[in-house]
Amino acid sequence: MSMRPIRSMAIVITALTGSLCFSGQAFAEEAQKKLFSAKIEHKDQSCIECHVQETPGIVRQHMSSKMGNPGNAADYVGCNDCHGDSHNEEDDAKLAEMPTPATCTVCHKEQVEQYEAGKHNLAWYGMKTQAAWHHQPASIVKQGYRGCSGCHKLGTKGLLGVKEGNSGALKHDGGKEASEYRYGNAQCDACHTRHNFSKAEALNPRACSNCHMGFDHPQWEMWISSKHGIGYLSNPDDPNHGGYPSCQTCHMNGGNHEVRTPWGFLGLRIPTKENVLALIDVAPSLGKQLTSLAAALPSGNFIDLDDDPQWTFDRALILQAAGVLDADLQPTERFVDAVVQAEVARGPEAFNEERKRMKLTCSNCHSNAYVDDFFKSSDDVLKNVDHVFAKGIAAVQGLYEDGILTKPEDWEYGPDLLMYYDTKTAIEQELFMIVLEYKQRAFQGAYHASNDYMHWYGWAPLNRAVNEILEEAEKLRFEHKVKQKLKL
Ligand code: HEC
Ligand code: HEC
Ligand code: HEC
Ligand code: HEC
Ligand code: HEC
Ligand code: HEC
Ligand code: HEC
Ligand code: HEC
Image (tube, rainbow, N blue to C red; front, side, top):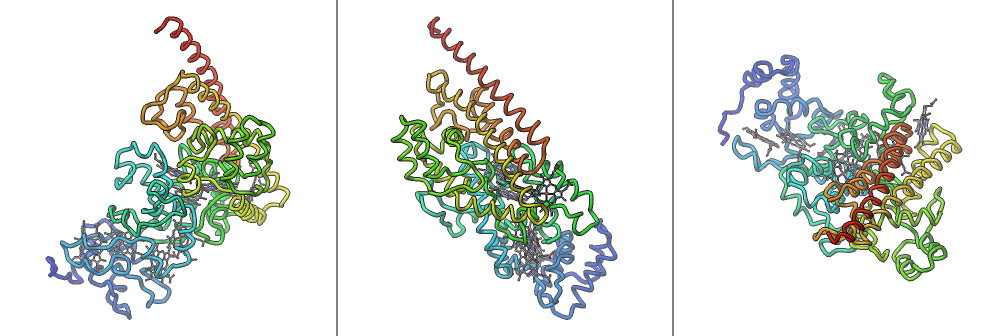
């Protein structure tokens, strides 16, 4: 039995117009019309009657949403379609089910399938591949959702990879990990926030901006400082936004929920067999290691990109510092975990497909020659960034090799870019700033046509940081020599 009597209409209206600060009368009348004079009996009548008092804000959003207000009245989606019917009393709220994408699949199969094939669905797994993640408080990385997990909860929980003894394609635990979390398994509400569940809201580029912003991925800031963003925002009343593209135009074209880019977050790619074998001519002494590495890699060609051996070397050094390749240039567990299973980097096949798709989108509004030129120069920015970064990495690696820096006990690699800000020396803190801030801003700024981000927030501090690393390395070597001489 309900502890409270079923509310009479008078109470409902008082709740809506009285003490609560909603623009009362109109909403109450609207709710009354919907609830009590609708031609069909609402299946969630009891939920609404009680929740109009308990959580009037939610009822209001629901009743104004497309699902609470469908074109065809028979399609009405009730609270119970998403939360089940088990809870129906004042004191059994814990029986209410919390939705996952499986809840939405029933009616939106296409979007759910696309979403699950894309990178957003991997966000939770990707987060957990990071060494630094394991040192954080639960409020930041788990149920608290106040840091990493707050953004990364748009990925599915429960993917099992190499750390769980599975080195093949990711498997799903069937809901075990998700069941440890009462909230935050809905995923779709990252862009269609509850309980508006609106397409218009998700089409607004602001829908991406709570996550794609800030320190290591300021795509929002880059877009609003590019001609694309400025033009778009300058035409707010035009449904076509003056003919300028939003995030969604380029990344979810045609409403496709399967998001993925050619380079990805870190601007890495999986080297090909051919890339690596070509290095043997340049560095014959590494022949054995390179042949063995090549055997583990895909064959093929990256469109648009040149295969300059120097670039391959620079990237090999970056992968080594990330613990993805070991000292002998062989793939590590992290290679399987982060690169292959979490899909942090792409091989030629996936890269080429995404690059072609993106160029096709650009060519709706630009000439092919213009677009080719754009990608050529943006890829070149990344190549130059990698070269400068590699110099910094080589200097720090040298300090480890010569015993001037020593690996903390619980570390597998030194230097280790995946330790982020937990690194113990000032020189490695600079590497952290490069890998997550300066490098990111330089190449992401280039691809988003934000010249200021590319140059002054990216390229300029990158070069400053590497110069400081080189100077600091000299100082550390000198101090080390002095200490050895004085037997300190
Ligand atoms: C008799 C009143 C009543 C009825 C009927 C009722 N609820 Fe609730 N519901 C509550 C109360 C009270 C809470 C707890 C609110 C709180 O924590 O502040 C709640 C909480 C919830 C929650 C959140 C649970 C959580 O753990 O955060 C959901 C979801 C929910 N109700 C859905 C429904 C659905 C769906 C129905 C109809 C099938 C329904 N309610 C019927 C009173 C009711
Ligand atoms: C029982 C079927 C059903 C379920 C379950 C369902 N939906 Fe819907 N949804 C609909 C219908 C029907 C519409 C279209 C209403 C209309 O436009 O007439 C819709 C529309 C939408 C829209 C478009 C709204 C707009 O502004 O045009 C979004 C977004 C959406 N649903 C998201 C979700 C999400 C997310 C879930 C899971 C949490 C979900 N839906 C679960 C039936 C369902
Ligand atoms: C289309 C699916 C859908 C419908 C319909 C729906 N909800 Fe929800 N509801 C969600 C999602 C998604 C969440 C977020 C779950 C999470 O955080 O894991 C949620 C969370 C909640 C919560 C707890 C979180 C909070 O913000 O307090 C309450 C309470 C709730 N819903 C009540 C209702 C009520 C009442 C109705 C009907 C008026 C309703 N819901 C209709 C999908 C739905
Ligand atoms: C709740 C936070 C959040 C929101 C909102 C969000 N994203 Fe993401 N996005 C992420 C995370 C986290 C990843 C990385 C997932 C992974 O690959 O592990 C990501 C990845 C991506 C990628 C793939 C990059 C790659 O590695 O190739 C694209 C493209 C993207 N998002 C575009 C968008 C767009 C466009 C929107 C808005 C319509 C949006 N995102 C909204 C968090 C978010
Ligand atoms: C403000 C929201 C936010 C926070 C907080 C956040 N991330 Fe992310 N993360 C993102 C977005 C957005 C992306 C995708 C960016 C891109 O592709 O440029 C991403 C990408 C990643 C990726 C790369 C995934 C891939 O496949 O490319 C990893 C790994 C990652 N984040 C781990 C973490 C960890 C660990 C933390 C906490 C220490 C964290 N993130 C904190 C939003 C966030
Ligand atoms: C990264 C942001 C984002 C996430 C997360 C997201 N959507 Fe969408 N969704 C969009 C955008 C943008 C559109 C509008 C696409 C268009 O029409 O171009 C959309 C449109 C929709 C529509 C309306 C389709 C139509 O044409 O009427 C439905 C239904 C929908 N999404 C369901 C879902 C479901 C279910 C999930 C979870 C699996 C989900 N969305 C997750 C951004 C998102
Ligand atoms: C004019 C098209 C366009 C617009 C608008 C756009 N992007 Fe991008 N985005 C790109 C291109 C091009 C790349 C790089 C593709 C590659 O890897 O070759 C990219 C890359 C990304 C990536 C992967 C990491 C990176 O930055 O290289 C994410 C995440 C992303 N964009 C999110 C967003 C978000 C969020 C918005 C809106 C605030 C946005 N983009 C606006 C074209 C666009
Ligand atoms: C929906 C149409 C549309 C799409 C799609 C689009 N653009 Fe644009 N773009 C424009 C418009 C309009 C301008 C402004 C032209 C001007 O500056 O006179 C512009 C400007 C530019 C500029 C000049 C920026 C500056 O600061 O001068 C570049 C570079 C550019 N776009 C590249 C791209 C690339 C690369 C893509 C695909 C990833 C793309 N655009 C997709 C419409 C589009």
